Image (tube, rainbow, N blue to C red):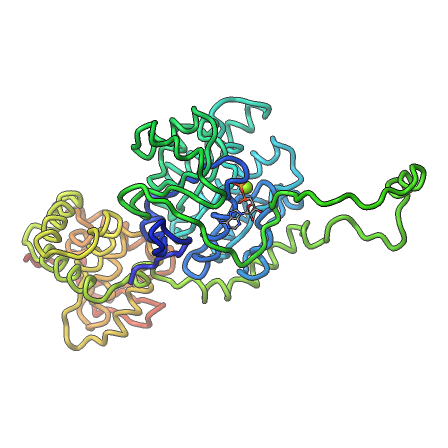
Length: 494
Ligand SMILES: Nc1ncnc2c1ncn2[C@@H]1O[C@H](COP(=O)(O)OP(=O)(O)O)[C@@H](O)[C@H]1O
Ligand SMILES: [Mg+2]
């Protein structure tokens, strides 16, 4: 099953969907003049994907705070907790809570710095919490401006660096940037260039149209059509959307935007001049504070809310992305190909890139439906296949437990963990340093010992030695332990 996020209708009346897994890997850029419907589009995307993926939106205008009502986002009011934004961002990742970073009420410099601190906090989170997350930035040209403007140089530098990190290096850390801008020409080129999916809305200025045409690979003449797009109409292209440019009309949203343009309404009857002055200079009876207090929560409030949302978030964001997207037949075919690859005698010592090439060829030969898994996915599958259990005595549910625990380790060490887990589950001797090294794709026994130490530090396992010096590994999360095995035993080959 692929997770398809329904964003509206295509020109031919069919549903327009985004492939969420692909989107996480390839990012999205939305462009359109003010009023073209970008914020509405972002809201639609977030509402529709909220059950599937953790989200953060950097919201300069406070448009998105209403997502808190129906969709469980916690509103982080930057104005109330500027000093703690880094800490809050870290907890957001740890507890996997969706948030709206509301920057309303800050001046441009402080908005930039707050966004930078928050994005850096998400980016710098520990490896063990690198879960997938959509990071949406509305009015991205404010945070990644192409040229220096009114903001002070230091704020601009910080915020541009954070946006560059998000778009260029976020993927490995699970962060998928979705950015919207009024003016492509005002957005830093390196930030725009990292998105592979585009949704282009109404665009007036030639320079923006030219850049949009370049990004979409259209002739500039064709891009003239962007001038006539209606509000809510976009042209979409990219690996998560479709192979050729397609007109898409964005569908309705459930939560209410606060950014709608003011409508002309007749003026009320005018009071006499002195009464009118009174109306604006004297407080009226029982006048309430201008904005609800909830909008400026203190740091403590936000942290308390984050803690409360933890369970809800855990329930809403299932652990393994891979499982989410599993499609039985296709997955079976992939597993078979993986098994064939690891069965090759020299597979352990081949670079992953070479194995991946081999994998792609085999996918084509096997006529795997859809696009072949990308390299990160391949790495994950490889780790699991290398450790694979074909032992009939092993309960599938036990093995599933082990893969779930492994999923919270960095990709490259999962295979090692699973190798040890497999030994523990089948009551086999603890794998030797040589075998562990091989599962990691190296011949260095020192590296194998460091890997065990790494997992021990993080509480994934505990190593002990028996009186003969044989190693026993215990897995506290699973309650299993290996039989004693000698670290320097010769690695089995084949
Ligand atoms: N697809 C749509 N369907 C219905 N209303 C829309 C749609 N797109 C935009 N709107 C409305 O148009 C107005 C401007 O849209 P908005 O998303 O705020 O534009 P932008 O963010 O590009 O400036 C809002 O009132 C919004 O509710
Ligand atoms: Mg907007």
